[in-house]
Length: 314
Image (cartoon, rainbow, N blue to C red):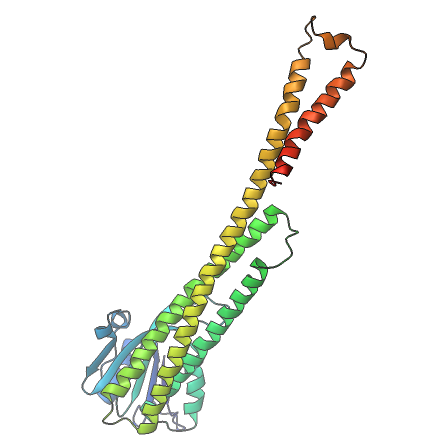
């Protein structure tokens, strides 16, 4: 799909006079139409996926070719980065992407009624993308706040099975959050490189106010990168805490089972001895032999318990 801005009220398909051309999964005909109108090549799909810095930032025929993995999914959808390309020249801004994006749509509304310079449209897109990523980081921060509240709560009345299942779900949730933040972090780094690359390589024809806005974008990205690094540290802390709590709870269960098994050994030994019923056992003829046996069972069970209590093991 091809969108050109500012929109032509006459409805013509000509790209003449357009300052921003947005291609979404472009066809061969749409690619050819742009190349014929502006004399600039449209980056191929395999070019958008390159990870080398030299491949992501290039200059060809005076135009800046830049690519970055953008998180285009809306809230509630999987945060899968999709490669996007930017071609910035004095005459036109070309964006190539494979999916819908709220940031691009917001800038498109601004460009629908007014004519923005290509560099101005480029800065607006970067600013919207940074704002969108900031919102995603804030949402991730809220997720970690909720997980932290559950993990470090004071109420420990839940049963171990429920506790372990809940903490396991929290660990999965924080793990997904960590993966999302790593993707956001990488996208921010790529956007920062694009902003600095544009300021450095287009200084001859870039307006001063546009350069200042690009530098402001870089400053915002730097603060978001620091914020994301702090969230990553919190993720590690929460996962370690959840693992530690699960281990402590399981150790408590094992301690109870161990004490119960030790306490049960002496009574079983007493019952086993008096259950043999040999003829020469003097206790068989005692009047209170049964009561004696029960008392001995109770005493042999209490002695280990008192020992554990004295050692402060229970």
